[in-house]
Image (tube, rainbow, N blue to C red):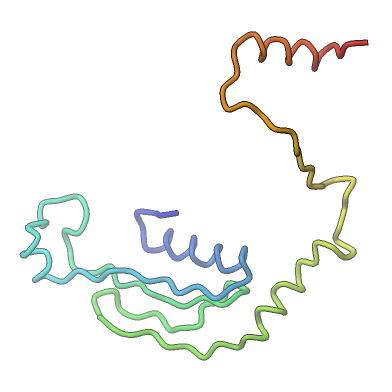
Length: 135
């Protein structure tokens, strides 16, 4: 997932950290004036001005673990990772405990073998059977 804005990209990385209950290293490329000259991109829609360095490290709960850095500064990100925070994040959304609501949400697995290609007639037949199942 990508966005054309630094905020959008960071938001997607933060969301990925929360959804996966994992640490996320959000890495971006930095473009300098020299890079713009080398690639002759000064008149383009992207990579036409210095910047882009918005790297960050996010924790499993979505918290930013690094300080923001000026987007024109090249640096290496470091963070102390508390591995127990993974368990805390995973325990927060206990999908098999008291939050489990099989009446509202459940996983059904269809183990039937299905053809890769279906004709219009088989689709038509299925839709008629769905409305009026055979007796």
